[in-house]
Image 1 (spheres, rainbow, N blue to C red):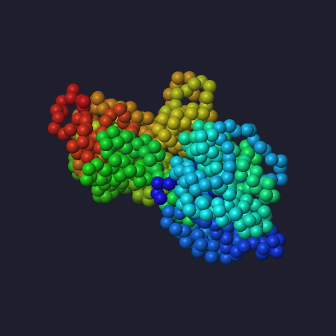
Image 2: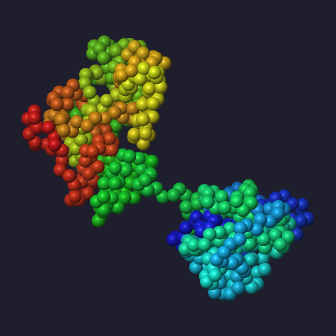
Image 3: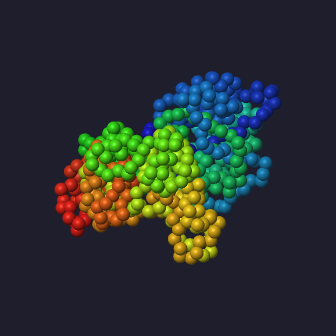
Length: 598
């Protein structure tokens, strides 16, 4: 029965209502008058009246006896949390609200309805028609024999149908008389399986069925009628509240089965739940007819399948990036050594020893960058450290992220990110630190907050400007404080690093970057042994060959480089032979100064 929607529990004009009665404290002599261990068969499943069970172990045992393809429901469990604890791997508390219509108030007959009448079940043909309505509503049907037998022999069960003027059954509702069934001391009743044919065009069928059942039990002298509706079915809740129902604190317990699975597990994640860095890849894959299965939307993890090939990816990281390559990128000290041995220029640096030797290195080079040897998104990095006290503070910040810290001579220039996929540079961009522009009216703190909101909105929450000691120090070094008003039109850099996650911006330079810088990026990726990476260089001018290597990122954000075809190149790499795009630059092309990548 996997095709059945468990949300059919939701009551309303076109859905099912599962109902329960509130079990309130009653005098011992009245409780003793009740029948014991009451279970009612309704065809689609059993109603188990929990208040008639004195032993929660026995109640759990009965629930666990549920047959395949059925949906049993336990209502009125005296202590539902205790019941679930008896079989936590098999039972769960249903995420529904319980609503009660008390018959102490005057009856509301409601507006007159036309085009249909409400009456009791009369024939087996009516029972067949009820099942057709159930199926059309995505509900579990009941054997006609069970419906008809209950109608004839079970006087505690009432079936009503709404019949159109042409004789067509438009809807149905089931009621249970608790007093008749088990001598309920509370004198209650409940409404079940309210269903209206989705093809019915006449309004008010569901409301008419509900009012008719309530009128039936009111005439019998019952105290109230209960029902349950899924907590987020706002349309049904609005209907019941309009009819005079009020919410009561009652829970139902169900067994974990295939039909109920969406009620006790998270809904399956789809591409719509992916972050922008994974979504761009999913969209490109689906465009080519590649199957996309979302494994973990928050982490951007997917399985892409086409023909006999299947690849798991996490954003731009895939199974084809080895653990060795990842560890090389993760350890910035190791990355420096590997690329340096391959002839790549790296800044002068040392592993921090947190003693006087660190200060001697600072005095020697004059200006340094301090960063943890492992980490991402710019966390713990301080740029432009030029004094002893500032060095100590920067070392402490970096050490919070990782115990090993790297100190490098600061090189002048802008932060250039080159995306290398399968030995090809497919995008190049300058990454600029976060900055704000003065209005002459707002403080710097207000400008930062506004810019941070804009960056977050533009990146799906990925980019924000931290309000921390680094930002405060950067602003102070420019001669300002957070509460100063920045003159209109003046631009102020508020972060030292160009990391996008810390409010930085990206500017595409793929068409102008010097070919030698592309060669450096490809050579760096090749030395590390990583097929997809973002190589970061510091360059004084993207049109010139001068550079200093900074680091390699094993999971570059491809969405940051639109409209460059990074996602297309990534899918080309994963699924060779699929329709793709020509590379922006590959090794072997002319290195002439005017030969910029296409």
